[in-house]
Image (cartoon, rainbow, N blue to C red):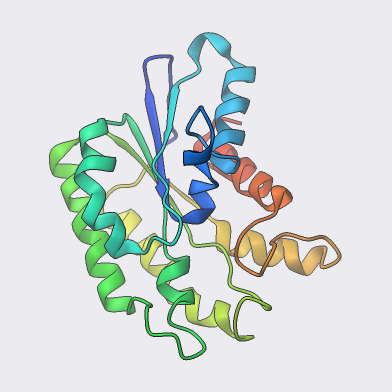
Length: 213
């Protein structure tokens, strides 16, 4: 896997669910209050001359099938130079505790593969960053939510190899380690959505893994 290179003409696009969205449509810059903003602001502060254009098309509640439906408008038409995808929590979470709106592993993998295939055929030079789904912990769901999530994390890593992703951001184990090392700190608000500390954990991992920290 290869590191990410950016300059002032680069278009860096983040897409995903509520963890990426973070009320982006409620504020003037359209970037939201989560990890995409932290990454953008760090890159601006680190090297203003080469800070990229940062875009956010995350939508709260999205699953992989929702990304597929808006892939043309919210990814391909925007022609990013770097694309970062974080999706999968809702595909699992919405199928736990008797809920019926989850996505099976087979459909998740096939749909994810389809959108990556479209990306590679339409924007062959676009650098690709795949973020693992992070965590599903109580009180958000049943105690073994992360056990159910694990195959989806593995699928992301498999697809990263298949479609030559530049890097995979190892968020799943990172959150589990943080929870184990400092259970007294609040890493999520509800077992899924990161606190500001959790978003900083994502941003720092993203920057470090891409070689931009």
